[in-house]
Length: 280
Image (tube, rainbow, N blue to C red; front, top):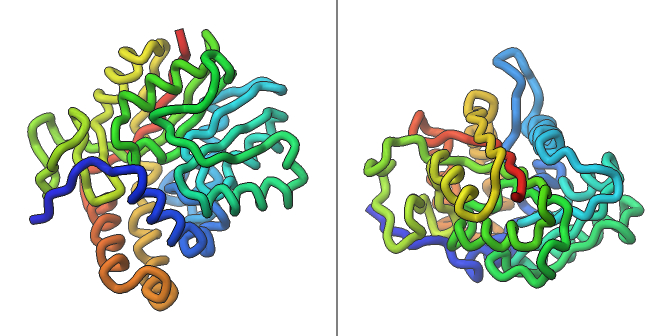
């Protein structure tokens, strides 16, 4: 049984430098799970991922002209959509140099280079002034963070009073004290590492961390029924693109990715939440 520590930023950066392009090839530029309305919804993974972005935009509820921080921007697809549809200015951050390049190219191609920019930055040490953003979101990025409490404290610091935060993340749904399959090593309290790049918290942990960071009006919405198809769909895509993945990352990394995604989609231990909160 493998023991994992909490994710570390350099290994997450290396992973996305190597594999962002491979994943985005079948995800239409998105790197997050999908949201299906119901069992009759026949959307593709890419279409469902766009609907997840819609859900995040709705929870963030930005006003035209707002300045929004995208924590873990990937290759920029959600940020570009947010800016285009809501008329906001977006600063996206990532630890991956390659993602900064790809996201910047995407913003330029959309004609949004003046209002959407991307930077390499560590979410645990944000290089921005206090109260300099009107809103922030983290779309499946906190699962990669070495210390979620520190990230949320930093986000609270850079948000203006009343600023909104929206986040989306897979979560651990086993009762406290029980662990799904793998024994965690050193980690932030409440987290359960599923691999070298991913560590999950419980839904109640997010509520506690947000309260301590200075947020209120916290809504933690369990949308597991709407996201359950995501991990199996990504595994199917991985297997159908195995040769391409192995060419870039090798057999061992391919097998590790499939095993981790099988854990994320393999039963009731893992769910998914959409969270919104307001900076006090």
